[in-house]
Image (cartoon, rainbow, N blue to C red; front, side, top):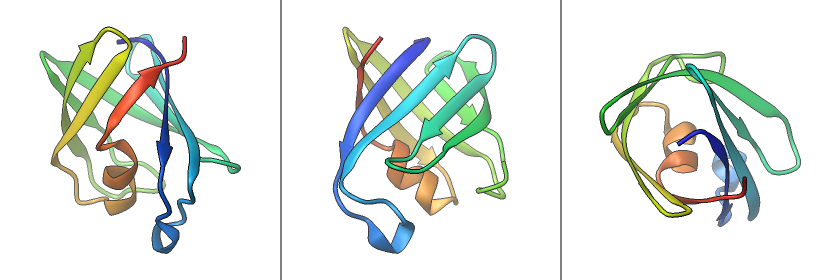
Length: 100
């Protein structure tokens, strides 16, 4: 699952997301980062257990979130189980394509 993934999002202006390409970096260990289109990269801590991904609370989201993940070839499907942080859930809950 370690790698760089991308997805094209539609407009979500109320959340600060605009149509364009977004990048998800999954690094070795417990590090994950999101690059917001034409903005900054936001690091986060993550842990994995089987097909579950748990994201820690961070500066943008005050609560943790949990997702299931399935990797099929170059496609990483993240599906929200529970995440009270709406911007993070809107960003992550989709199919991502491996870029590297």
